[in-house]
Image 1 (tube, rainbow, N blue to C red):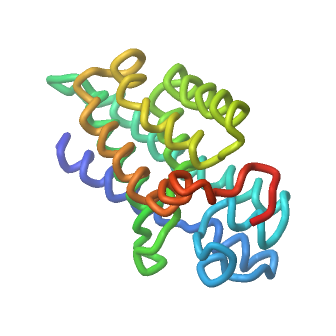
Image 2: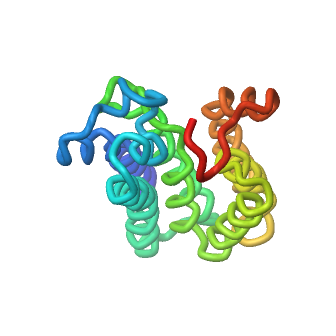
Length: 205
């Protein structure tokens, strides 16, 4: 029974993560499709370019919540089930499923965003301390260097370390997968950072 429930929770988390709020909110507000305009990325940063701060904030919050809520609900459900090992490992896999849903959404031809907001959402669902550490790191790097992408890469790159400190050592490999996939989705940003052509926060491309 445990594994049946676990598989259902993973599928439900993936499908929740597959809701592309950048596309849905853009349609609702009659904005250009973020997959075909701006940077062609269905994320809050591109929606900011195309529709302004209000639309971007809505996308940011919705993308974070679609990672946070499945993990939180799954933790509640699993709390009523006897498990012969640490449930944190199961929750980490469920968090990964929601994150993968954002990167490769089943409802939008498997073409999703870069994963920062949803990644932070699942992290907060797992551990408040770990989530605050990621946010704090992002803020420090962003204030120092004024690159949003660099801040996200550093903050999420340290996720395995934060997991070992404030979550669960056995879940570190899963956190490494989340970090690695976020780095992969930011490969164009990494190239621009290396070349010195990445736009700084507060400046137009």
